[in-house]
Image (cartoon, rainbow, N blue to C red; front, side, top):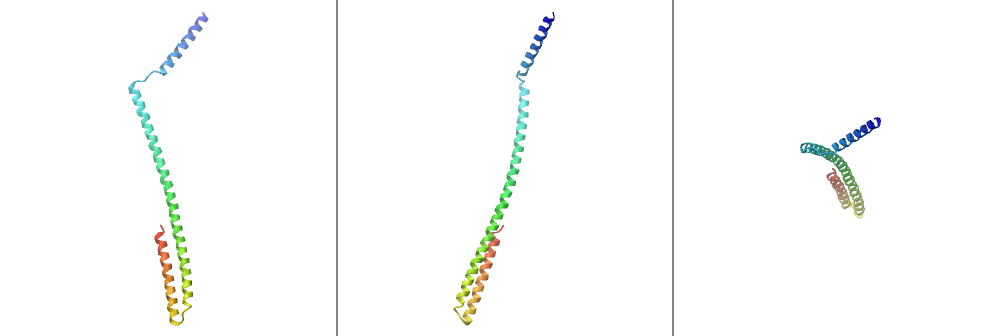
Amino acid sequence: MRTHLRSVSALSALALSAFMLAACHQAKSPDDVAAEVAKAQDKANSEVAGAEQHADKDVANAAAKVGDKLTDLNNDAAGDAYKIAVAKADGDHKVALAQCDAMSGDAQTACRKQANADYDAAKANAKATEQSQKQ
């Protein structure tokens, strides 16, 4: 009798397990499926929107950093161009003064004044150019 009971219990457990497994793989109703699909789509859309916002923020931050570096680069280039222009003006000024030494009297004085005026104008032009190129 006990053996028979064990067999019935085992058979019942096996039948119950088979029933439960079969229930797991049954098709859901179209309304349930539509609701789950809509919920999954909403969640996916929400995740995509969040990822896009995060990406936009990252790109904006990176662009700001690049913009700052580009501004620094342009300002450094403008400063270096100014230094070059002043160095050229210094050289031209020295050459002009040396040429003035070949003259005498009022001609030499006028030549020196002109050389100094040209030098001052070249430096002012270099400074104006530097300022217009800086950001």
